Length: 173
Figure 1 (cartoon, one colour):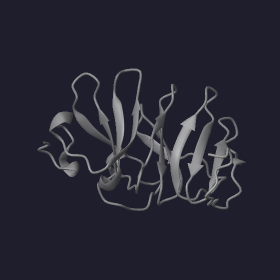
Figure 2 (cartoon, rainbow, N blue to C red):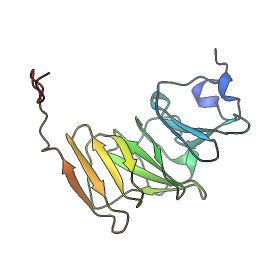
Figure 3 (cartoon, one colour):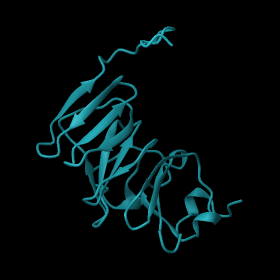
């Protein structure tokens, strides 16, 4: 059983900390593990060598993201259901309630919006390809979007924006 509360996990060994609904997970090439503490409104890192926990994003209170709050523990976030990191040192954080995807530069601890040319509706998933482009799943928008790594522009690649509820699956199952 953990002895540190989600708000006080920083500096503690991972096995002695409590987590408030973990939902996203990603590991880097150095053995560090990043996880989202959904109801703790945090993104945390477990050091691959020491197993010490540190906060990457979030204050521990649900809130609206502001670009001016670019340091890790000063950035308010909301529900985070997924994480994705790439080989260029970026961690992508889809913030469900704030309806944005944050791009965290892990080497400099800065954060920006993935794109300003698109609006997302309840982002719940993110993944990237080898070119650095990113795909975003929108639970509320009922679609999947593509964000170009070269231009930052986005386009919808799947979904009509209308929720489909059917008792019969397309493949006949």
